[in-house]
Image (cartoon, rainbow, N blue to C red; front, top):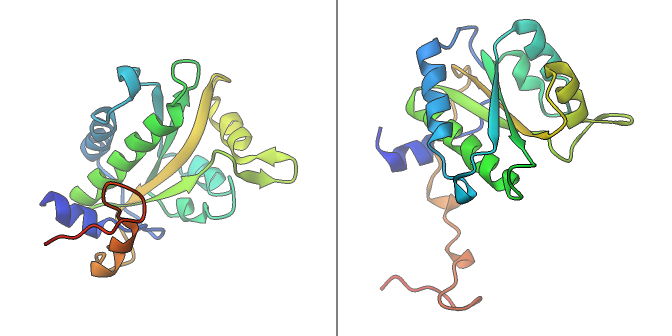
Length: 180
């Protein structure tokens, strides 16, 4: 699939078929993450692949908006060692986006569940909930969870309406960029 077609087809999929994702495709998703750039090549990330149905059910309760994990074939929890990099958020975010794009190229669907700075419930953060569930060490921060599987919903590719050209400036803020 051509790169710009992958970009247009990337949509958040939250309903999945009851079908296992083969390990070789999971490996490709992780390869895509490892190919992402990181500041000073510090590569602070650590990825936790979860395909255990019981754990996926529990992860689907990490915060409001995570329910789609209940039908996902797997989840990839994106963590990073904050002691290795002061820009771990950016580094981990780029790796997560690489996973999203790879999923589309492989015929899979995916969606992002924000964990950092979100609440699980009264008095507990989503990050604390996920950390406890998956035994994540204290120096690793949990950025997000990527739900992955074969789509059980069909969304059209992005169209021209996503191109907000008025949000592009030329040489200084507010100066319109002209194509001709």
